[in-house]
Length: 454
Image (spheres, one colour):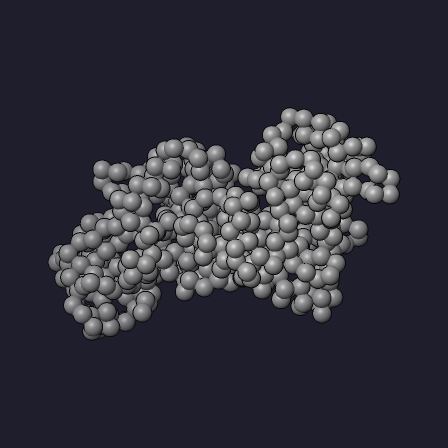
């Protein structure tokens, strides 16, 4: 059973660690580990407060423990006392500016690392250029007392993947870092990779509980396939298979009364458009002239709940906690902007809490249905995807009959919903659990490595 202790440092010369007697009662200890660094030491129990582990400066330096006062977890296994976890957050886009080391995303990472005291972990941010392979160390960015500090620390217990986009994810140098840390150092790596919409759809289609939330979806193959879906549903969505932020989404509507086709989309200037065409072929030749259609998917249109005649969908965040269990950590409604095909803020969308839009009874009902769907989908994705999944952002819809539909699952969900004042506490909860899951993974990797390292 893990427990948190204050890590303190004292001036004495012997290589001795003073720790609570409860850490020594089951088995003798002869080594201490911090991240990937392990050294031999002598342990003695102290009679003072039972929540402290005391090291001297020599041990601190040999462990390459940063000059930070923290309360960390202790994990005992095979005569080794592991203190930590040391959690590396892997990203790209660093700058030479000490107060803004990760450019526009500096504030996000500062907020992410600020949960360290409540979680009992030492998270830091790093990129491929900060790794010293010969020494087995990383020059990591730590955030303490509203300041960024760099410390050379051992390789971490686990790595949390926060690469910013698909381009960085495909970078051969960045891929090599991930593969090498996993293969040579057996470091668990969580939330790897961006999801592919069709891949997620195909996997969930094989899961009976999850499949009930899936709208009919196909890769684009021909106009006739779109015609058949239009006949069936009245409108369809064309989306980039690897898209995000609502970019490139088009809604195609067939009006059987005037026998015309309509296309709703956002143009390159960011203006919402609604255009009318007598034929589907003419629509595609005009709107999709410069687009590769084999990178698109076609999805069933759904008549969503509306507010003031504008469609509503919902962003739901789920996170695994420090016991490895899924939780719904945030729910928000998103209202489409006037004339917009999506509910994203960049297209004029608005963020609301459910209680701002619905009656108390409806709010309770929709929260229950959305939460149930999100937890079923989270478990299904985590069970079928390669790698370790610890957080997901879902875009879900509710139709006029009250049924829930999955539009998209994101492995690195955006955080625009947290600009709403009533969602600040959920912003903190999602950040806290994304780091707390690293505590769980660390414990699993120490105690049950054969289960966590695959």
